[in-house]
Length: 315
Image 1 (spheres, rainbow, N blue to C red):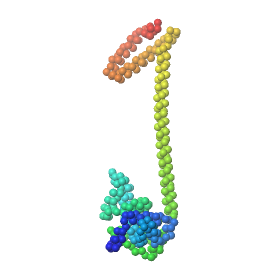
Image 2 (image 1 turned 90 degrees about the horizontal axis):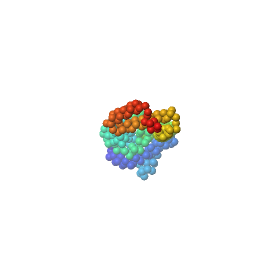
Image 3 (image 1 turned 180 degrees about the horizontal axis):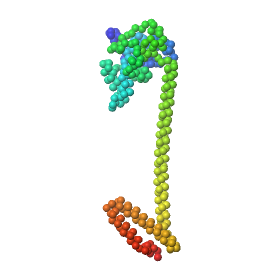
Image 4 (image 1 turned 90 degrees about the vertical axis):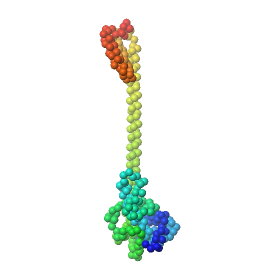
């Protein structure tokens, strides 16, 4: 590379590379104009846009040569980045992808990737997001492999007057300046709108699902609380019935009614003693056997008596 070309290349700072990338993106995505414009008019528009952003004027040939270098380097770097993003190494995080891609790029090219500012702009474009390592096999071009230094290519009058939409048929790399057509732009816009609708639908379904889950959880809590209250009420009612039996005045009842209530009172007392014994057994397991024997002995004594103690008290 000549000293003059090296000097011109060095005039492009990262900020100017970013401005050139922005200019190319804005001009190339103007589908209403790009379908009929020539290569020369395309780069004149890029030149005007670049001047508006940077305040500096550069020749279209200078911008075209610099763009050729940026495009090749950023496309190759995107291929490394996309490969790592699609198949991340074990233990890596998205914040590591950029560093890993630079390492992979260096291992292949033996050059440090220094076009971060331009790449951050270009990677928003579908062509860079879709870049893969096998790109040259699927889209062969007539370009020579990239060298260590950009080699200015002469602009012929035929190429300058060629409509941009016909460049692909002539063998030029479509990623250089070829914009998408109106139909492709509309199709891509429809795909984006469809994707946005799907995202909104998923978000809505997710929100409704979360709401339903919260409602079910609340319903379960209310049911558990209702069951607890009903259980407490049933226990209180049972206790009230037992108290009514125990407080029953047997003096005004006939012998059959007295026998019925005495039996119920005895059943209540026996159940109470068993509950107390079980409670004490849980609190002090060492005494459970002794208490069980005492309870059994007392039950046997009760069976031996022909007249219940409660009946004796009544009489």
